[in-house]
Image (tube, rainbow, N blue to C red; front, side):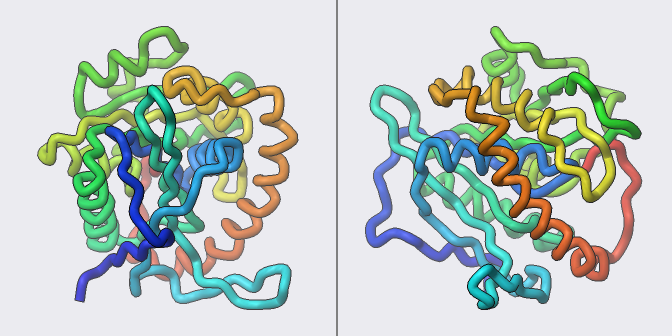
Amino acid sequence: METWKAIPLTKTLPKLKNPILVEGLPGIGNVGKVAVDFIIEELKAKKLYSLFSYTLPHSVFVNEENLVELPSIEMYYKERKGKPDLLFLTGDVQPIDEKSSYAFCDKILEIMAELSGKEIITTGGIGLQEIPENPRIFITGNDQKTIKKYAQGVQVEKKIHGVVGPIIGVTGLLLGLGKPKGINGISLLAETFGHPMYLGIKGAKAMLRILNKKLSLNIDLNKLTKEIEKLERETIKRTKELSTVTKQLSKRKVETSYIG
């Protein structure tokens, strides 16, 4: 039995042009998730796949209609004229153990290969001991040329060695496993407060400004505060509900300044 299944959410799969995948799963401050969810909503991206595994947390949500919902991880797509098409990966939770995380990333890279995708952007947070007033964005990746392309013309910190510990989870593994498969990528890491219940809105905004420019999204950044506050309420609610279950399932703790 395969660990992860990709369930199509559209009748016919789109023929995408050199799609770039942008990952934004929950992590420290949920900075990546907030940013990617905002982009999906603004671009009206369409659902492509739902990712399912029996290794997901053994819990369900109760929604506003008083019905239960399984935790979800979904991939969206956006077709664009004259620009590379986009894929977005978001969800309620990340894979919670090493084996599941590796298997999940292998499945995502398999989808990327099927869609002729050659580039990945992952997002995450760098946990600090206090709330940063002006969060910095750090950049790393699996290819110097790709890092240079995304660092040019925007304010990012390229000297990251010694600043953060290992990048744990999908944010790091997608890049590490993607390189041998010919899929280059970068990771954008925003400074944020390291408390598990804190939502890093400022870090998400800083990350959005970079993604908006480098991916030519043409999103109205003046709408950020209002829309992010709406996304914040649902995101932090689900994060709290899943945190207890996830902690129970975690087999060991890793002390690091960054967790994807």
